[in-house]
Structure formats: structure tokens, C-alpha cells
Length: 291
Ligand code: NAP
Image (cartoon, rainbow, N blue to C red):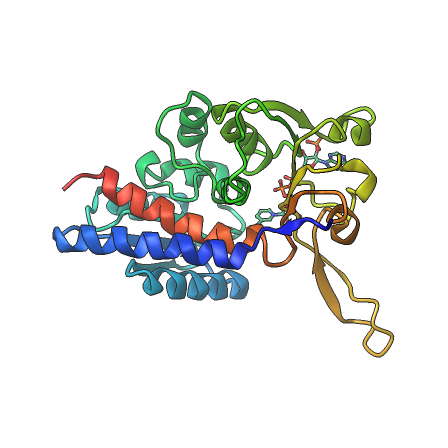
């Protein structure tokens, strides 16, 4: 029997409804819920990303503001702005838009964001808190993949989970979330020997590699849950339009769905939930700031 689809769009909507209620409660108490993005220089993709963030934030009642600094600015100007935003109680969350222009190093600038306002969950403080099982703002994509898993309703405790990928923003935090939920976690990467055999042991398979359709159906144990974080643009193989592209995951969906019990599609799986996690972290940050 083909797998049940984990519908990321429906899940994201459900999460957004909950966020809207939490935002309304805070606002009724006279408290602000504000998401502030910092963009240095001109980057069309980052600006359009900011526009999309603003739309999503406004839809759940979160105030959104984009702060633009000119290209060529030094780190001190960014540090000044970050300090202002860190101290402003109307600012619940801060996003640093990437890429930064030449001369600015994200590894220097990102740590300037106060950990309680690091709603993308990319700073070392939140990573450490997550590892130690303390309240943290988890990286949005890892949190989204975990929400997709939880949405199946399957008891995670004691299950054998394999995470393929060990990036700081997805693979590692995902393994920490699974461990916190009492799964038995194996973390795989490019040096893992006989990856298919390791993955075939798993009842839960979480994939964040960035190699299109690397995980074929024979990796998947019958009945496993498969969550695919991969978002890869590849040729659509359209003879009428050789430039046409499509988005595929790291998993061969058509094959894996014949063996899995539940599976995320790409697109329409983890992606839509990731944006919802950013909004969820923002309202969580606002709640933790106190009245
Ligand atoms: P990343 O930083 O490039 O890390 C990739 C990981 O995959 C590394 O740990 C690497 O191992 C491992 N890997 C590479 N080739 C492998 C192989 N042949 N066998 C086993 N492991 C292999 O990537 P990421 O940031 O985690 O992103 C991964 C994918 O998720 C990309 O497609 C990206 O577009 C997508 N993504 C989606 C969202 C979303 O919102 N849905 C957000 C972020 C990323 P080593 O550590 O040994 O090199």
C-alpha cells in the first residue's frame, strides 16, 4: 500500500492558526510581537525573500520590519543596529538576511543577535541549549522536519531513527530533537560506510543531503517514515523547453512511497512548514520576553 502523504501545506496552515491565536493573546495584553530583518546591501533574492517573510508574518498578526543598511557599511554599523534591536522590547525576533556583501562575515555578525531573539535558531547559544535539552529556539528547517514527523502521530520514543546529513542548521539539530524525543539516533554523512544498509535499519528516515534523488526505494525499510528536507532544482527534461526546471528532493519519492508508511513530498512537504517555524519561534520569543 502506498505511503500516507505528510501534507506540509496543511500542517503549516494548522500551525499558523495556532500562532495567530498566540499572537492575538499577546497583543490583547498590550505586548508586541515583531519580526525584524536586517539586510545589508542590495540583493534582489534577499529582498524578495524579505517580502515573502513580511506577507507570512502579517497574515498571523506579527509586525514585520526590514532594516536596510548600505553596501560598503562596516561591521560597526551593523553592530549598532543589532544592539538597538536587541534592546528594543517591540522586537521579538531578528533575522540576518544572507548573503552579506563582501567585507562582512556572517560568522561575526550573526552572533551579535541576542540568543532570545535568534528566531532562525542558527546561533551557537541556541544550538548549545538544544543539545543540553534546555529551552531553545531550534533552527527552522530542522524544527519543520521534526514537526512533519510528529504530525504522523507515530510514537517516536524508542524508534530507530537515521538522519542523513550533519549540517549545523539541519542534520545535527534534527538528531538532537529526535534524541530529546527518545529515539535511538544514528547520524550518517558522506563518510558513512554502506549507507543503504544503515538506512534500511531505520523506522524513521530523515534526509538532508542536497543530492537530488540520492535515496532510492531500496534504502527504505517497509513501513518506515520518510521526511525529505532536500530541495534541489534539476532539469525538468522537457524536450520543448530544455531550460525548464523542477524541484526534487533527496529521495526518489515515487520509489520510496511504495515502501514507506508516511512520506513528505517535495515540494509541499518540509518547505512550507519551515516558514511557519520561523513565525512560531517569533511568537515563542515574544512570550519568553515576559510582559
Ligand atoms: P549541507 O550543509 O550541504 O550538508 C549536507 C550533508 O549531507 C553533509 O553532512 C554531508 O556530509 C552529507 N552528504 C553529502 N553527500 C552525501 C552522501 N553521498 N551520502 C551521505 N551523506 C552525504 O546541506 P543542508 O544545509 O543540510 O541542506 C541539505 C538539503 O536541504 C539541500 O537540498 C537544501 O536545499 C535543503 N534545505 C531545505 C530547506 C527547507 O526549508 N526545506 C532549508 C535548508 C536546506 P559531510 O558532512 O560528510 O560533508
